[in-house]
Image 1 (tube, rainbow, N blue to C red):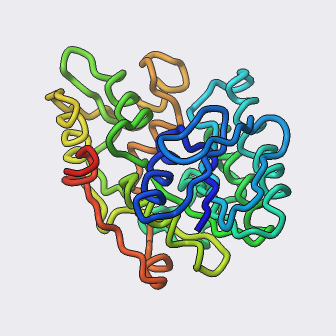
Image 2 (spheres, rainbow, N blue to C red; image 1 turned 180 degrees about the horizontal axis):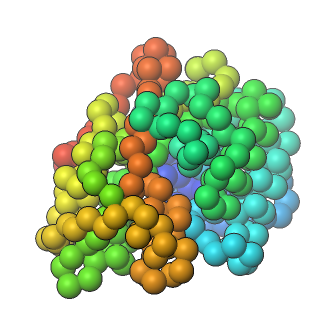
Amino acid sequence: MRIAVTGASGFCGSEVARSAAARGDEVLCVGRSPGPVGRHIHWDATAGHPDLAGADLVVHCAAAVGDPAPGSPAEALQYAVNVEGTARLLAAAAGRPVVWVSSASVYDPRRDRSLVREDHPTAGGHLNAYGRSKAVGERLALAAGAVVLRPRAVYGPGDPHLLPRLLERVRHRLLLLPGPDVPLSLTAVQNLADACLAAAGWPPGAYNIADAHPYRRDAAVRQVLRSSGRSVRIGHLPVRLAELAARTGRLPGLTPYAVDQLARSVVLDTSRARATGWRPRRDLGSGLLPAGR
């Protein structure tokens, strides 16, 4: 196949591009910067339509991520990329199959998420612009007949998001986490890449993508930090105190969204994806290792 991967220079997109090339596909890396393999096609997701000529499949990984301050330029960028960029991408796809990488952040955090299925509400309650913009963008993708994948807390070698956010909260080898230990779903970037390539044959709709089993939060955080050579102590901060600190900015890097992601159990039901034959092949033990190990 000839596969166009948007955002192929990014964390998730580069893994999809490498995985596609490894199985013999021709890869078109669509974005502002070249990807790790294949041919580069320049596209700025904030302006213009990408050239997708000749592509058999489009995997849309390009996204503006993060937890920006309300009203900031970074927040405006998330809407420009995640919503308006999606509309331009779908128009350019012109009927080609599209796999659109979303996020479990689209799920309404006001509802119980101890076992989240794809019919969990996504229309409101989001704690930052990332969740809101991804929810709007994926509605456009679903209306266009795309396959939408919803991973949670994607990790792996070269992770520019999860690990740095944890590290910035470490003080004197102590990491304070809000609330008691809880079970959480995580998604190895290799498992997400496998799903992106397999999903070309799936019926349109939304699919949760995560590792085979949820993890206990504290043990998972220790393992992720150890992978970077950091051994830290974990302490527990009462959730209400953490929420107050997030609202007032008293703890650097702690936001209402971060408190929610760490303090509440979020376990994804992946049975819909598994019914297609997809299986997660990596977990925290192997998903943190560099490629080839």
